[in-house]
Length: 291
Image (cartoon, rainbow, N blue to C red; front, side, top):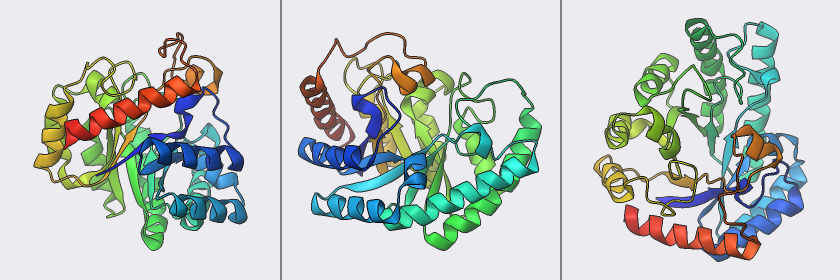
């Protein structure tokens, strides 16, 4: 397994430019990570020159890149409007092209719709069917470029399309592409799954990506609301050798904090140096728990 973290851990701001990512590559390398999870929308908007330079910086520090997407409503692959679905397909095709320049082969997130969900038009059956048909096209583009797309299973407060591993497995079956897998997240599983370990075992070889965080999105090990060693045992049972990416959110405020509904500080007012220490401690804890 390779271990990484989401780029927005240190800030509630969604924006991050080339210089910001260059600094993060250095930071996560010093902490001991293998991966940095970057925003797909940032990758979409970056130039080939910037992406190529980030790839070289990553190589120099032995840092790989996974790409995370919560697409905007204008790219909704489940939209009732065919023009919006087409825009979403083109959007992801360009992301795939830019990921190749960056050297990233893993796209993860709730790309089957848009995020954050507004819950203003809840037609699960219709949205599911439209989304599946869109993903079939997206999957072909991913296959051509050697990219794995892992669809994130979100809790009921963030989507209505798929909330459990069982639903995600059926969705993947209907898309029917080797490029399409699923993403389980310990935070979302804690809400929706009767037994997260059973969900991992059920996912088996279709588990393409794993997000980790405590029940309130703190760093793994901060409150031990989740039985990390037991989850590690389930990962061992399925022979999981994929990516394990922390998606912790401790800082309230900003676009990220507002989007995930974080209204209080969970960091104990930590400065950047203390945030570094906290996540390094968590990384050591997680590697041991999953060993």
